[in-house]
Image (spheres, rainbow, N blue to C red):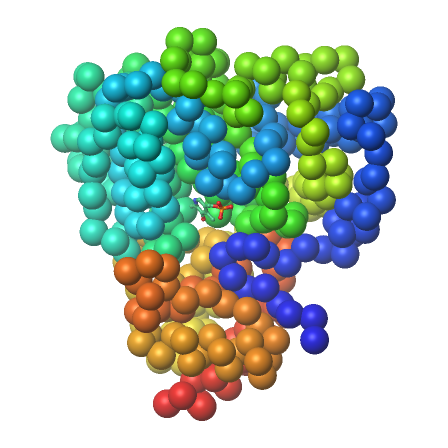
Length: 357
Ligand SMILES: *Cc1c(COP(=O)(O)O)cnc(C)c1O
């Protein structure tokens, strides 16, 4: 049975993207690869909505978070990090691992931060504000556009983890004054796992010049120098086939149009939640902070529901992470997702509920 991946990553990959991956088998020091990589780089600027180059590394999203930390900071730098869930905590843990002094603004899980909360927490001595856009563990979003408007006049770098939203919910890196924006291939970007993408603003690059944390594999300057060659390259062996896949996936997004992609996600998320409500299930997330790419449903029967949906219906969803285990199920509706997939998921959820109740 072909499983339907309705998890918050990895997500379903279209046949066209898999086909392209299969057919991208060139050597990475050839013009042919340079052409494919160049196409990806241009496409990434479009999905990030930025004029600056977007870097690609073969890694999980977590690698992208670590890469950002080691390229932007020096030991002992003080930053403010906002945590609204497991992924906010992870970013903090990475920063601390590399010796940053992190002040944490803890927001009760299930919602996003407010500007008032941030205003009281960001201090002159902070070099950056770090936060998660779409908190995949709780289904809540931070209002990054509003925060970006507020950050515009501030000297601190604005660093955003958008691993589970970029390509699914509206994000405009340049217009929203984001300095460093991190995502990965396997969530809303319709590609297999294995690539992380990082956009860096002009102010971000100034900071990269000054930052002293050790780095080798993750070196942004080396990566940029190679990607800006007439035939774009990578310092080390890139994930050639995945680059072909991601480039094709972004081509599909360009054909659909970014606005239409966002609209599809908004409509499907609203429809899915409306139907879930009809089943009498409560949401974990505060209604003012709902994500367009993932829904967290509060239930203590998550493990049983998950198992039935998977074995009987071929639909994979996720449970709660870490301390949220046993409190919820999470359904991803991002990337290559359509009405029919949502309906199949709802049918399976309904069937599973009938069995467990
Ligand atoms: C999935 C995710 C990550 C980590 O991505 P991996 O590829 O699993 O390392 C980081 N942040 C957010 C918000 C995510 O959803």
